[in-house]
Length: 349
Image (cartoon, rainbow, N blue to C red):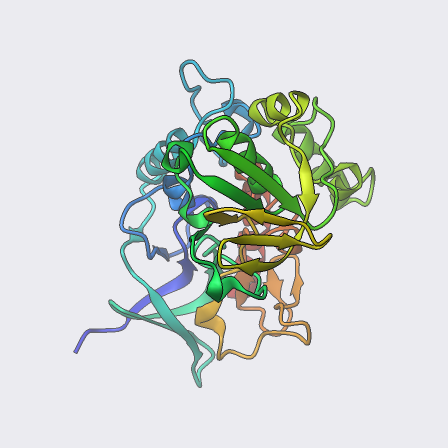
């Protein structure tokens, strides 16, 4: 029988949030382990599409303690560069990442400890940081006719390169950053591209990149300044600006239903296509906590910063602004991780 392994703090997820937590746990001299379901380091960045670029230069996209190196020939690094940086970061700080390990359930114990049951044994801990992100839980809305569409359907999760869609008539669904970027990426490469959005897209001012977004999020911590959503929804990256300014990135009304050979918009217009790409977001991957009773009435786990209101031993890190301003970004997660580890130190004392 496999022995139960014991640590003071267990981190679930070895992407950017988990590594930022690991950095601060190491500095706090706590005994911890990071469990990662992936087979290789790099978090979700190793799975993104080929043309994806960061919103910010490398110097403004770093985890705590280690600046991201410049990528030769690129102002804004690509996803592969970020994945390599995360792998080097993990190695540099000798973070105790165990992979591939899938956490199946978190359970309470009579003496106040937590048990993490995994496909590679059981871990016992006094505090838990969930940093699993959202990449493994793509969301596709249940629109009528999806099951009757005869063409190909995929989510952002499965998109890799525009060359895969040469000669195709493609509908891109979603008015956020991924929808705009993928629609721009396909323009001129696919036979035809139709971008559909729930509401008219709102581009952020062209001069705003990830640096400015982080500064805005930082000011919002004290309640000062505008919210990012007040300014727009889509970062105007260079490819997006080029497609927009050329008149090639025009949004159409949202899909109301699918047919065997195309889509029907909310305005009743029919458009024949053979591919639908759903850029409709992700959901937090908190399945190991499903039986732990932390969710509130709206289905989300209520938090005070990163700490679950219903259990001070559990922290959620990197899922968006509800777990810390800019906590889902490379540059923002370090600050939130530091705060979470500080609160865990207080708990353990």
